[in-house]
Length: 269
Image 1 (cartoon, rainbow, N blue to C red):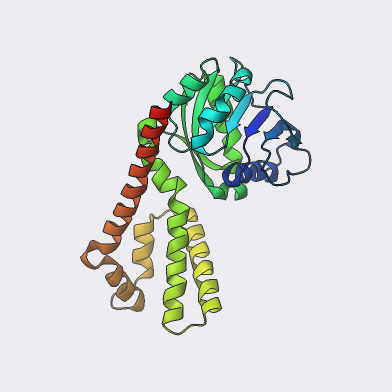
Image 2: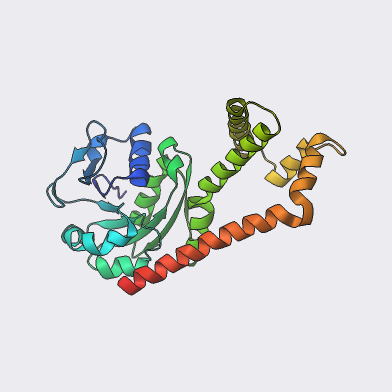
């Protein structure tokens, strides 16, 4: 079976760093990883820090983890190590497979990857879209990302919406937790207590939703009793279809911005 035993990270900021933490927490050998990033935090023991790309031989895969606008700057230095035996993995928002193919034409394949910061805990959805991957490389890519959560192959046409839902989604959940805590505090709870309760409630609700055979809509129905406190709150959320419209507007804005970034990347291409 094909394996990505030697992985080079170009950039190791918040997202790539969370992925590295997730891999190591899952038991992957740190000797499999090398990092090129002069600005990165201290690396975990056993992970090699390189001063330059190509200073450590050949790699099975190269993960691009820099800011998307830096792709044109870093690509010429990465291209020499992205040969036929190397798959280019990219977490660069908005950078399409066609752009990766243009920048790294000799590579053995290209994969767009969309995780979120829960990768550090092995709890992230991981959307994957690939091109020019044989069956072995496709399986190897999936296996590489399994320790980070739930990888799923998607059509690249879905990637902007997947980015909005699974990539940006945690920020929307955090904002909702914050709003719950602020609402509790505004109604009289001590602020610190309201935040602890809101966070514990969302953590437990998410864990139950993940484990339950019922979908979230059914779980909400089961929590609510006719005429009870939960139903009163749900009625407020559902009034004029307000929550659904707000969430739709939120996802549409994030999706459209992802599409704009892709157009900018093609233009800079």
